[in-house]
Length: 194
Image (tube, rainbow, N blue to C red):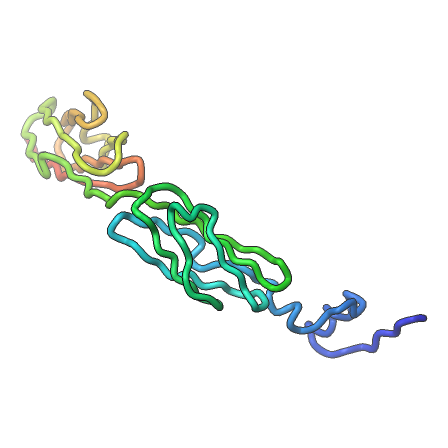
């Protein structure tokens, strides 16, 4: 028995025709975009619950996590709540729709984020060759040190948490430290004409 496909208007109908009407309906095509928002989150110990919403897909939806020792999902439908435990680690929130399509989101759980500070917060260097020792504290080592204007001064490292800034010429500058998570702290260096 031959099947004849009539010309139908609209992009959805054209897609169904292209699929030779093999069980195709508008509902089957409505979930071409299937993802979870947000796609990834970082939760510290003070951040105990987050909402996740699925975009696209065909209901009913089934939600799960890869590691229940890190957290669980509650609720149902298109939006659920993820509640973390006190454990740290990486968990994955998953959703599966009625067509068995899957989407996932990553949850990175860690202790409360510390602030990153520089001591001293500012310095004044009068003469070329003058130096000051900066100490970073907080954040997550290792640290990376840099300066705003390398022509005006440079950094030498003593260890991961301390570094020495040396003035090269006049003109204000900044000392920048960045921890392993991308958290930054800046100290101002005043360098008047000698």
